[in-house]
Amino acid sequence: MRVTTGVVRHRRHKKIRKLAQGYRGMRHSTFKKANEAVMKAGQHAYIDRKKKKRTFRALWITRLNAAVREQGMSYSLFINGLKTKNIEINRKALSELAMSDPKVFEQIVKAVA
Image 1 (cartoon, helix red, strand yellow):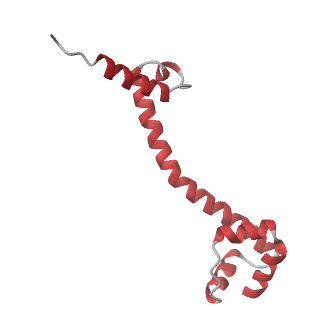
Image 2 (cartoon, rainbow, N blue to C red; image 1 turned 120 degrees about the vertical axis):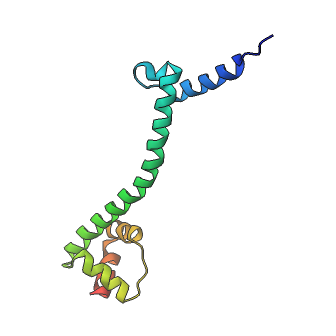
Image 3 (cartoon, helix red, strand yellow; image 1 turned 180 degrees about the vertical axis):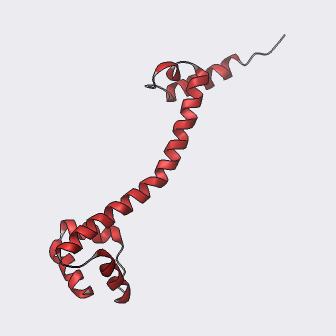
């Protein structure tokens, strides 16, 4: 008697189709197309987890640039001043300070200038 992969294959296909819920066309119903779509979605998710870090850093730099220019200084001079004065605060913390507590940020800018 021949052994079929009935239960195993059915479970695997069901799992992939569940992951492809909400996809358009045959990508949500047909196993072959759904599998391709799910694999590609996984690749995009992996890449975008890396991109997320870049975009947030760019956002912090943009916010810092705007906040520092209000104080009459450029971003590059500000960062250079931080390095020369050995003030080790990262860009995320600095941008949060600039938004939430401008007075403290202003003191940091004065310390650097």
